[in-house]
Amino acid sequence: DSSGRTSKDVVHVLVKDKTPPEILVKHPKRIILGGEISMDASLSRDNVGIENITWKLPSGELRYDEMKIGFLPLSAGRYHFTVDILDMEGNWNSTTFWVDVIDNEPPVFDVMIDPAPARWNDTYLSLLENVTLPFDPSSVDLFLVVNVTYRFLITELKDASGTGYMNWTFGDGAEANGDSVYHNWSLPGEYLLNLNVDDIYGNRLSKQWHIIVIPTVNFTIIPHQTYETVYINQTPEKEPEERRYIPIILGISSITAVILILTALLLYEVRTAFKVVKRRIDDRRDMKR
Image 1: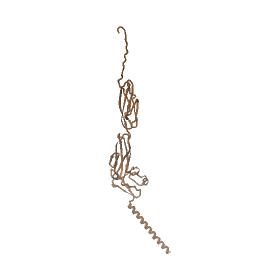
Image 2: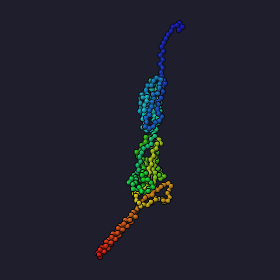
Image 3: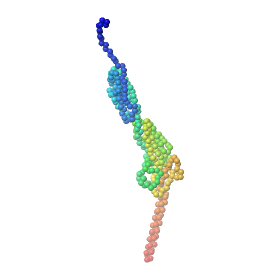
Image 4: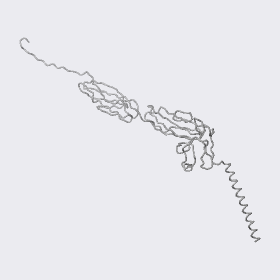
């Protein structure tokens, strides 16, 4: 004061932190299915210090007191994560982010055909070395029969995301969608059967079969030197532009075979009778001598 006397007092001031923590999480925006999502919140900061951290995972699992974690997704999609941080003054903050998991693998599947188609017998290949065919037998995947309704069924279908599109084209202008379809070919010929299967992300697996539609289930190719070419529903001079019909190579017909057998028997009888007559003539000549 003015007289020079001094008085001192101690004032205690409590400074409280009312500012919530600042959450900073380092994470990828997207990953390929099969990889792990790595998340790092160690860059988060607070004025007085972080008390605890809680992770809420898409599976419903909670993880505590870990600044860095990993999560392995089992399927494609968008995954949401939530991070809660509490500081030492009781202030808390929360943030939510997502990571897209991308599926870039096509579906995997098998195909079943009912009734079961015939397959090219490998033993024919050596027998037909000198026979000209309008197709390469070794390139044919399936032999089907005309006017028989076949069921085409997709089996053992596997995809991490789920399938969205299945399309069949049969080579004769017809097509169908679905995992179980039916089709028959009204004309014999050479066709390409195509199947496209897409998943919901547009990944596609395509399969193709080279098929020959034959006119009868008992059809066989006879490797014989004497054969004739028969055209189904067309003449040799003019071939349709949209479809090629297969010339069916036939062996000697059953009627011709019967005629040949009868002719052979007749020749055998005549030859036998001639031998008998000749023997009698020779015997008479010997007696005269």
